[in-house]
Length: 401
Image (cartoon, rainbow, N blue to C red; front, side, top):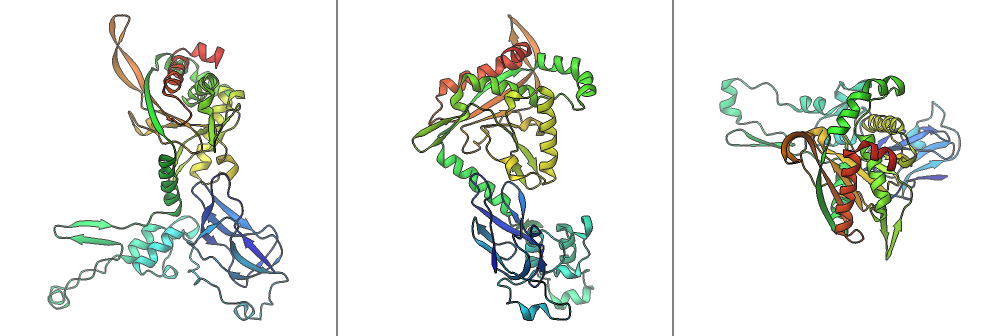
């Protein structure tokens, strides 16, 4: 008999939510076969059986929060029960009530319970027959309004459990946050409470970068098979500035500063499940094309929920680009245990004074949030000035970055 336990989940991740059981009590399992899916704030991962046997007991039901090292299930070594023997009699009763076998995420199952909807009675409209949120809401919709005679005797129908309405048609909806969203929220609040976080700002004239991209875009795409975006320029500029101001590439451990002389740059990616930050390893050793390929690949797989935990761990500095959504200015929150994060923003043409004349230039505000416990204000300001110089003079970026 063996126990299926929650594995190590990676740096700073200590708990997960049980997402979906792929096996039920009485099912045979093989070594290396996925048994259950866990959800963390970073990524979903499958936990596999470490030995052949039969799933005897499910200890943590779907939706349960589990800690690293805790028991998920009990597997009894041996062959599967014969087909003519009832599996339920050979195995103890499951600790948590079994969920409906319909394919659905934990959030959709919770919504179904709130709305009193039986998932077995729903034909899923999602991929491979998966039941999605709209399927549940449609099934929970009130029946056609009764005839006027019935209205006078029956009175108003009760409102759905997940929504409420007040006079004048002002409706509200109560939606439970996903476990990933709850964990992200908790970690962001912890980062604000732990670090002495400050943000400093500057602005960058993007004229020369835009000119380089305009001249090189087609040739770059034809040669390397990927577009020449802004992220490669800003990654290279960040590495150059981090070399000048290394305490922004550090973390705090107790009374010590761990200053890192390698440059693993995290790139924030927005997904349906929340923000994730995959990491570009050894960014100082990569070409512009290699950075752009990695950014495109990591972003695509992040939105498909196909990133591994290793790809989300160990960054030394983070870049986030709110400009893709139209943000003009923001104060990014530190990605603990890192002590620095750079915020890019929307490029907007603005009048500026240049050599005694007013000219229109494509400008971008940049923001640096930093941990004031080990990074002084002067360092933060000079870091952004260095970034500004690298971006505004691409030749300097190529020579010194």
